[in-house]
Image (cartoon, rainbow, N blue to C red):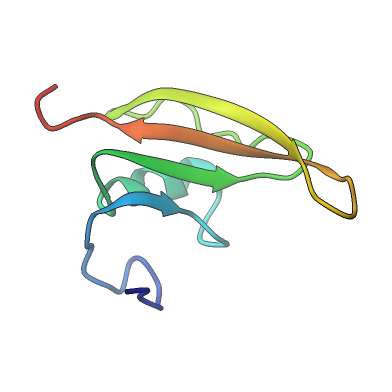
Length: 89
């Protein structure tokens, strides 16, 4: 069930995947996403042509930048994707 509101005003409810959308600069948004991602869940921060700068983040494994083309417009965009470390390690 979708929940609407500011991430800092709602009680975190962990999910298998979370996406930051217009919430803060990437380096500030990424740590906030952790509370919303279940162990082993993925986190995503959209970027533009220039990839979002997240930096190292404790608790996140396998961070990567993915590039893609937007259908119809053909614009190249980026997204930072990482996975929250599983509870056991």
